[in-house]
Image (cartoon, rainbow, N blue to C red; front, side, top):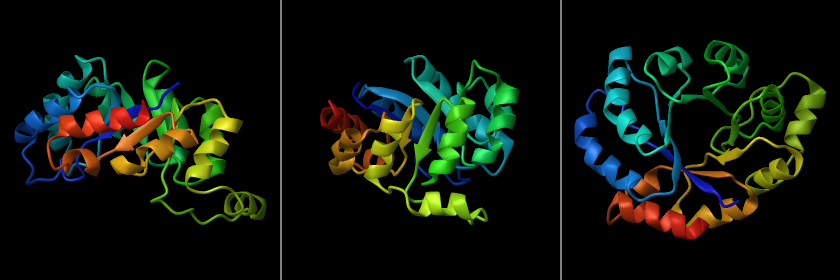
Length: 217
């Protein structure tokens, strides 16, 4: 199967000085580029009201195109607002999130570069694991686990290792530039996370998404 696009909204979209309504036109352009499987509302809002405003502006546009819409970490608000699920940045939160949301919601987990965390949540039923080379390994007290982690594959090799060892889909969560998309797809990423390359494209977000789709075709 070809890799699919996992679109992250701009890092500052939930900030107080950002107008989500003004962003909608650019967002629609990106969605209309096609081939997007999931959108993550990226970042943490200063208030539940700000998060709600962003979700209410973008979620209907997303879901009416049969694209999943997720928010970060706050699984209770995700359910309350009708999101398709949640993207967790802490593997330790997986069990609680799954118990609260049940099997009908997407629960994905960003494991950084931790194979140990990825295996644990993958075997527990996470809908996807995300590998993110921007996040270093945490402090690890168990010497066996530390040796397993520090001696393991990194970068693109981590994606390939996962595909040969485990079943759940993996996301390459590195905010990938368009010129590097193909290498991540070839390495085994089921989903390619893109962010800056889309919103900062010199033409428009439709053109950016089109280029990503061409790269992973």
